[in-house]
Length: 155
Image 1 (cartoon, rainbow, N blue to C red):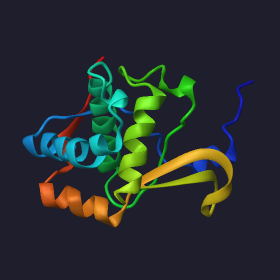
Image 2: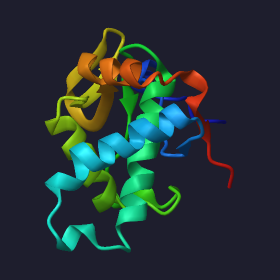
Image 3: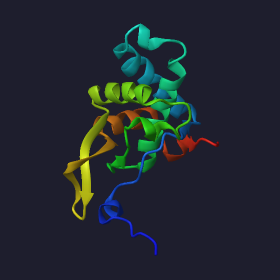
């Protein structure tokens, strides 16, 4: 006998993986802009170690690519436990959170905790939900980024 999926899981938004990579010049430009203008200024000198910067770049690229691929104001689920990053391509939880917090502080990403039921998100539970804000979508539009601008990383 197989286990039935939970009711809450059937109402949950898609899971955000960090596998998306910028493939178009526009996508590469928005990632570079967010990294240079939004994220790097929030980091201390020690946090900008040459060994950390490529992973922060990949986290930014995966986060933006995954949210842009959803189109519209749809929420995505993203676990933030250390173990949830073991399947991600060279990104640690710490590096992802640095990018996420900077983009959230800049008003480009909205984050909420909670679970899901038939009505949608509810304010109980611990799962993290993410989506681009209106300002985030304006930035995407300003850079001319489209759905095919990011592609899934091949493993």
